[in-house]
Image (cartoon, rainbow, N blue to C red; front, side, top):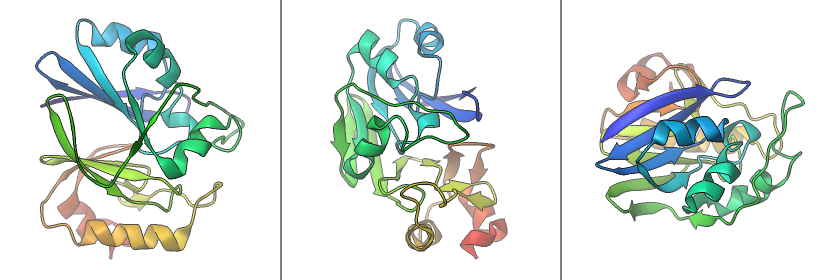
Amino acid sequence: MEIRTFVLGPVATNTYLLIEGDKALLIDPASKAEKLIELLGDLDLVGILLTHGHFDHIKAVDGLHEHYHCPVYIHEADEALARDKYSGASFGLTAYISCPVEHLKEGKMKIDPFEFEVVFTPGHTPGSVTFIFDEALFSGDTLFKCSVGRTDLEGGNASVLRESLRIFKNMEKDYFIYPGHDAPTRLSYELLYNPFLN
């Protein structure tokens, strides 16, 4: 599986394009739907996965859905957040989705050639999730390099986030971690140097 990273939007959100053959998935299309459509080219976009519902992870969703008519997946606990123009806002910036969505369930999932696991990791938002594809882990705004997501926005909960972080501490595989912002990292590195995992 090929992974391409695009840093998009006013707060430099990582949007991930996953490619298997002529099929593609997008994780957190943050902005610039037209540019993403251009980058996809002849690839068949078979789904959009959302790690959570904040404005900076969803701005391109409606435009992509209108073009590809592909399913959009989000955890049920974050659907209201993603649909409300103001509840997911920050820095005076807003975005929301109006297209139909399907609800993510914890556990194994398959979309065309893509097989992965959905892990429920709330705390940054009530419906934050992590996606695991083989050696790659997409943590959204739950876990960053040497840091974690903020919990002072609507729906954030520091004690719930601490419980979610225990999931990462108990993982046996040394995943490559692709976060919602900033640089990628390795789980082994985070277990050594991330103060929130110690």
